Amino acid sequence: MESYFVIVIIHILVGLFLVYFAARAYKRTKYFPMLLLTFGFFLIVFGDTILGDLLNIDYKIAGDMFEELVETSGFILVIIAVIKS
Image 1 (cartoon, one colour):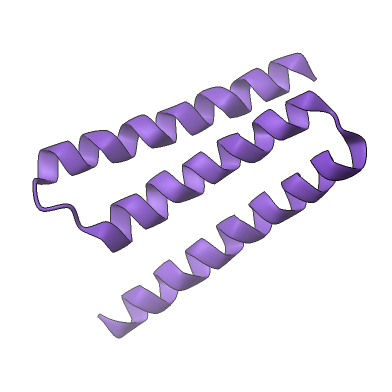
Image 2 (cartoon, one colour; image 1 turned 180 degrees about the horizontal axis):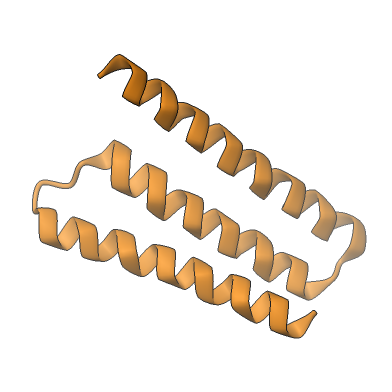
């Protein structure tokens, strides 16, 4: 069980590292699709790791559905960013 939490922490750190670099790129360029990409990556990381692994919502179906909605929103933002760029 301890190794699982180590993997989850690494997953969160790598995901936030990606979000950090996307935010830095937006800050340098002020390119709007890069902002969408940053928020999309954030929602994917947030939905997958923080909501899915760390919160452990009591009502499993509602928790899974909320997690999937957040992740899907993130993927939609990434798709929009790619299309606009």
